[in-house]
Length: 153
Image 1 (cartoon, rainbow, N blue to C red):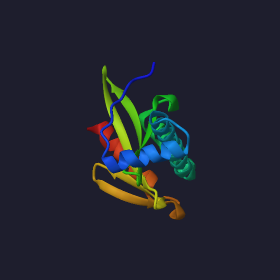
Image 2: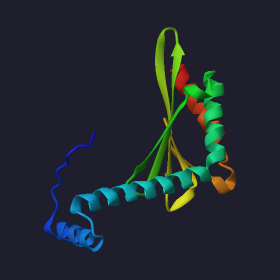
Image 3: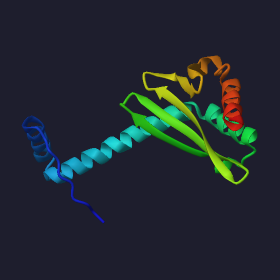
C-alpha cells in the first residue's frame, strides 16, 4: 500500500527538482521517487562491493563467533548499514544462552569507503584497525578475546 509523504523543500531545491523532472518528462512526485530508488540501488551496490572485498574475513568472523559460542551459523545475525555516505557499519549478533537467560553479544565493525582495505573493530577495549593487505593480522585473536570476555561477564 502506498503512503503519502509531505516534504519541506527550500525554494532553490524545489526549483531544481521541478526543472529536472520537466527535463525528464516526469511529474515532480515521480522524479523524487525514481531518484530516491536510483540512489538506494547505487549505494547498496557500492556497499555490497566493499563487503564482498572482505568476504573471506567476514565468513571467518562468523565461524569464530559460532565456534566460540557453540552456536549454529544460522543463529548468528548479520546486518549492515551506510553511515554518513562514508562509513559502512556491519554487525554480527548472537544471543548467547546460559541458564534460561539469553545475553546478546554484538561484534561491530566499520569500513571507510575512501580506504576499503581497513576494517575497524569496535571492541570493549577500544577501536582497532585491521588491514586486508596485512591479512587482518591480529583480528581473529581480538575477536576471540572479545567474545570470551562477553561470555564470561
